[in-house]
Image 1 (tube, one colour):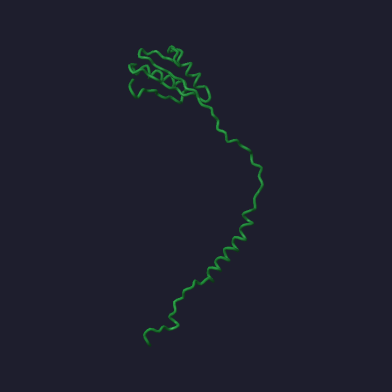
Image 2: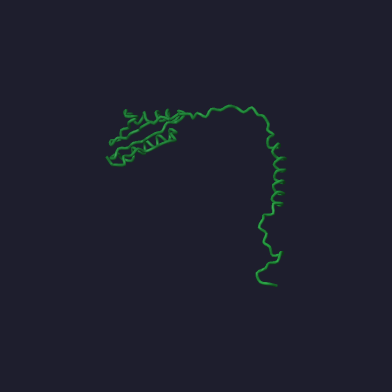
Length: 137
């Protein structure tokens, strides 16, 4: 054994063996050739046509204000306690049901606001909101 010489058996292989890669590619090609005609098979169906225009039906808003002395105002026009319930029933029967915004004066007794909320609940109003003034003006 001499220094500086190499055996032929110790040669490093510097090429990729392409045979297994070609075998795998041929198998995949055969699978795709078989499955593509199956995937193209479809049933013709006459589908209904639909429009994609959203309905712009916005419910109106009813503003119910309660003044400091306990008077009720329906969209800025004064109504009595007896008129309030039938008006709320008429609004609750509408489709879509309007939003009820209750606006209470800063100095009103809670009793009057609670009466308005109870009347709205008995009438069947489902959407009730409270209007406040965050700046305290």
